[in-house]
Image (cartoon, rainbow, N blue to C red; front, side, top):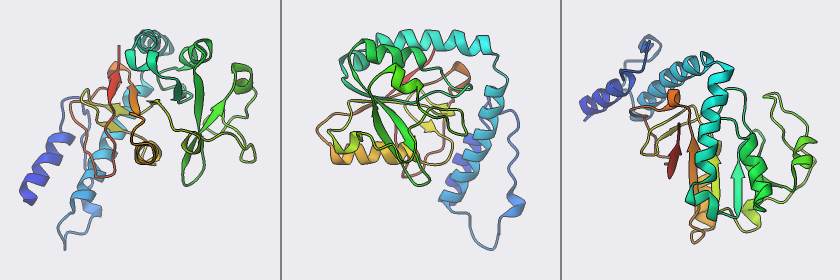
Length: 231
């Protein structure tokens, strides 16, 4: 069994797009067999490093051009057009830019929710307007977010969501996602689907061409994304 586990992980790590698949096994204790969880963790770390390198090499014009194409696809996507309660991430410089999508949410009179992070969880809180959004303080990631003492409507306790638009470092076209390792979105998606099983919650991941992978190692708690939108 372990032979197949090793083979699977090595295939993932040695994907064509991985430019420097160096795995530091010398730090691991070999007096016991590596567990599947440890192998997946190693593979994810190597893939994250590779994808971060690719993203750091993208120019501002490339990011803007691909973001525009992705935005146009989202605005005409049937899942987006029929959704009323929409959660959307506020983009960092190296992510697919979501400013225009946020504006369309308000223009279309949908209800907008954005992430509010703390050390242990992520809430999806309601924002009423662009002006309100622009007035929010910035985090250390330079992302707008309500302050800790700013109590807002939480989508989890007020009816759930129709759509979560999800960021990530990497995606496969069949819905596998590699995040930044905190597990916020995996936990969030699981909670919403468990509490509102009849809401038919959908998820859409936004990805630059550089973020599309042949495969991504998955652990039991990782959530599949329903749709991936890329240029």
